[in-house]
Length: 94
Image (cartoon, rainbow, N blue to C red; front, side):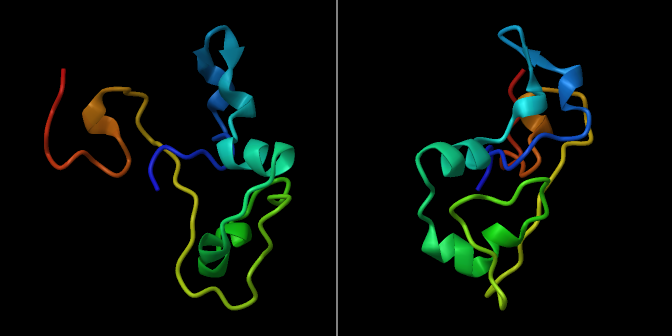
């Protein structure tokens, strides 16, 4: 999955959207906390095992995950389309 937040990066408060610092960015955490997140296949892969300050409320850790799991952090300060962590198939938009 691309562009689905699972917690803010260490430098998130250096960036602001609509006047609000990004330090509270956590799409999956907010969904899990407010309405619940039911993703049994992602849980089996290890989504609940991703290290974070507060575990996902409704996604349990998996003792024997069936896949690999991780959290990616952007290293570039750029926001152009070719800076996306998972790429855009070589197409550049400026």
